[in-house]
Image (cartoon, rainbow, N blue to C red; front, top):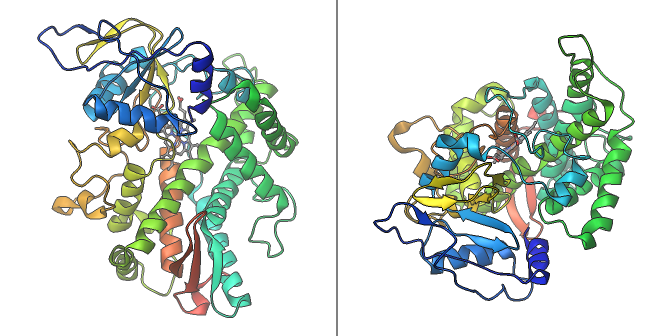
Length: 459
Ligand code: HEM
């Protein structure tokens, strides 16, 4: 993610000022001086996030400061400091950095997540009709099942592709009320060429959002053109987000959003919907296929609560506690990105005793917090049981920020309810419907065999 940033910084003569950050008696330690030390650049193509984390480990610190030209970039890998930033001092850190990539992808900051402003009401949360997620779960199961039938009882399928397409379908249904841009695949539950191109372009844009260099312009602009090619011609359908944006009026009865703002916002919500759920389920499946006892427990839970004669429904999800714990482990151990979307400080401020200058870019480390050995025992082990103590109902939101799922505060996720339902439904339907064995790891392919009687599968 930070390869492009590090290249730019190299050209601008890269200075790293990192701090031992040992707490001293003086509470107001200056974060950037006087402990300035120069560190070597990360070698070769090693991702910069790994280098940042290993540097922090070497310095035994949960907060550091990396100076890129005039910008202080401040990675944080402890939940305690994250709480101070995202809860206690949230109003100071509620803005986003202005970068070339985010400006380009948001048509000049016309969207919620990329906007520099911080005026969102905490209670704003996007909702969709639960039926849309269930319809898509039916389509997913039908697609894999038909594949198995055609193949004589089992099939090798690309888990990454089906998960990403499930998310793409839910996103298209939410935005436009349709699941396919064209005719769909040969079997109409599956994706057609248009959907594959659309979702791939969405992931290309996501990869470059905060790591955009001029040399990436061609790649990102081609991906943005593809997304616009499919998104822009849409007309409104009652009940979808597009309709909602078009009909929103201010107190004088004038449209709240311009056409350009609506287009930018639709693209942003597409980006926000596809990456987290598909990544979490891909990792959960990989871990569960590797550890048969975990898979077994999750299947037994579904057999007990839902039975073998119907498919999991949205109303079952809150009762599938073990399944939720598996999703939570995937969020903790394998976040979709090493860092949260950056937050920028709008004033000089002291956090945990350290001075943070105005304009600093705070990088809350999803990886560092989720794997922090001071919070989690055996942090690298995929162990859903750790979330199940005291027979507790597992919550996927983590307001204490011991892991970053949906984050919190003014910039917390606006689609957590939708995201939760999508993620859990996707995992539950896959493990209920099919026995999966590993076929190929990269991208993850599984050999799937239907688990239930043929009449239970959607036709
Ligand atoms: C499993 C699913 C999801 C996860 C884990 C997730 C997680 C997150 C996280 C960590 C952030 C950044 C918060 C911060 O900067 O502190 C975020 C922001 C956001 N998410 Fe989600 N998200 C998910 C699904 C969704 C969905 C389905 C939507 C829309 C329908 C959505 C819409 C947004 C928006 C608009 C923002 C930007 C908020 C802002 O900057 O004010 N997310 N999400």
